[in-house]
Amino acid sequence: MAARYADFARGGLAGLPLDRSLLVAFAEFVRTAGSAPVADLGCGPGYVAASLRDLGLDVFGVDLSPVMIDLARKAYPDLRFEVGSMDALDLPDGELGGIVSWYSIIHTPPKEIPSYLAEFRRVLASGGHILLAFFEAEGDPATAFDHKVTTAYRWPIDDLAELAGKAGFTEVGRMLREPLEGERYRRGHLLMRAA
Image 1: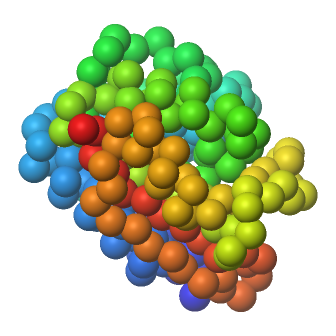
Image 2: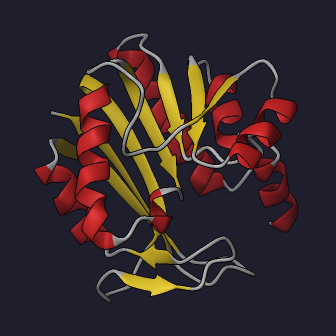
Image 3: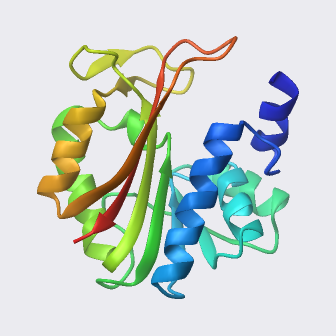
């Protein structure tokens, strides 16, 4: 399993079967809805954007960290990566057909999540899809924990789905994945459509 995760982290689709299946489902929903571009928000070193490109999507990445953007550009020179903030995107209203936030909202303090979700909804076309991946709180409220980058938060999947609903998203599906060897927390995933 560790080797498959390493492949996924390098951008290959040989990664974790459940995580990979969510990206495949997301890509299918986006392709079915049209041909608008997809943003990998909080893209880090770019491996999710590369995976989405390999699934046939027109994708670009945005990350707050110039260091991460440099790593992504070096690893995937054929893709577009930009420095930017997820809560103030330099995009017109309704520009995107899809958004992936793959473990990137985890660093957002709970009181700020509604503004991030509102910004995601602003730039997403009606009928577009969003995929959120996060650490799940396992029955606890939103809880801070010591992440290797900076403080992060675990979210109850129902609470995050409710906040997304208030921002104008309708749930399509969800998945909880138990932690694998070397992982501390259960993983939550929400696939939603812009109402």
